[in-house]
Image 1 (cartoon, rainbow, N blue to C red):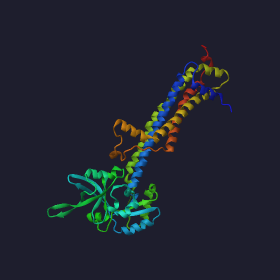
Image 2 (spheres, helix red, strand yellow):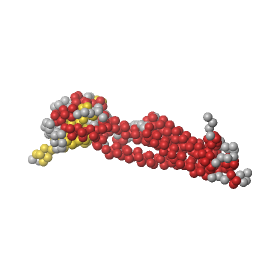
Image 3 (cartoon, rainbow, N blue to C red):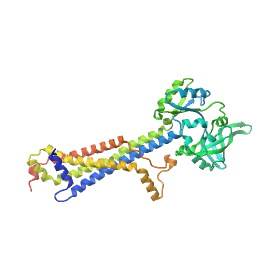
Image 4 (cartoon, rainbow, N blue to C red):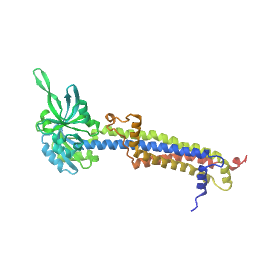
Length: 416
């Protein structure tokens, strides 16, 4: 099938000119500029997606998907609540826990942390924290032995190792004739865990639930029931359905999305803002096509006039130059999408090499929760970026092509 002559002429104008190749060079620069803009946008959004997925997976690997707590702060009939929760559809595990904010001390080293009392034999069913224990094991927490498993960053701050002792200071004190004396208990460090989440590695200490209940004076009560769900992404609706099904005097429910709601909301806001800001780069690159096509139209005035005298209508001339803008936009968009995808898939290696070369660390785990730079390319994002970039290029093509179609043959050939 023969191609339309408008297509043949338009592509020929992009390849070269009869005197010099400057116009082709400008067209190439327009393609590269658009490709870099699209690639930058793809890489940035992919890094944001990877960061969100990495944080979400790490959070879900070390914390429960949802919790049921008593409205008074404790649960007294937790055994029946646990049994009923396990009967609910979508619940894979339900384990009791005791949790309180406390102080840990080792000589002059003092740090605040969340002390969580767990049942070691059940804890591994609700979270994957047992798989992150690097020294010792969770089963070393024995009732009455007052052992603790500390996060690696917390142990480093307290300057303790496995086998050392720390003093746990409970928030509620004991009233004595001389005043309120804080309740303290010495715990032996029986293990360390490293989840990869600084929030947990620095701020969590695990003890046996019996020891925690005795230290915090809860008796047979617990703080609540932690749930592992079949679909963690539906935790908000699932935990509320479970709480309504259990009935009783009501529960205070919480899930992992509410615990980190501000964090994930800020990521979504940042992604939207970065898309808008970086889209300006793509827009600048796309509108470079205007300058390119204006130069081609200016140089091809004689050719346009000859085409008009041979019977080409304004719409044929418009299509001839529109083809050029569309091809530049298509080439730049596809090249940028491909380049951005390749860079995103190898961003960890590239950043790691750059860090070693410069002898610095770009990502501090204490600030960003992670120590490497993940990236995840979502097809929807690439399609959205490509569509917007191509649309901008198509819009940029309209004015130069329209100017070319308005060329008057007599005026263009007056001095030829």
